[in-house]
Length: 152
Image 1 (tube, rainbow, N blue to C red):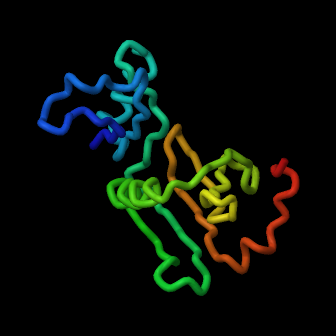
Image 2 (spheres, one colour):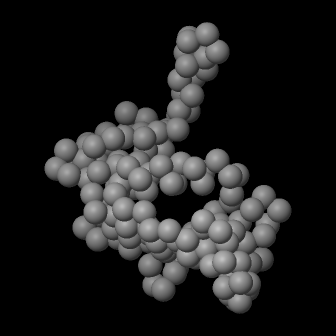
């Protein structure tokens, strides 16, 4: 089990005194065995920790990305550490995300900083854990989507 949080604790000289941690850190639990489930319950029940649980990845999670003709964009990623690493990579792209329903499940529409559509993600959740993530990033298929219902 590994807990991941985005937190700039150390200053330029190894001192944390120059920077206060944010009021609440978004936290992802990677690997959701019994210890992960206990940690998730503890985080939900104790706001004083300053950690907000955003997701628990199932130990058998599978991420499927369909990038169409984009070289190297289509892939299958298995396991919580590999999926978390993939998510960390994409979090650096400066994308904006909007929650939507994808085939009746929770999902995201992800856009580049200029507003162009980057990807649509669908999540399958079972037993309180994310068990599958499906990503459509194929530009040709994305161009055929009708997103008028969510655009203002």
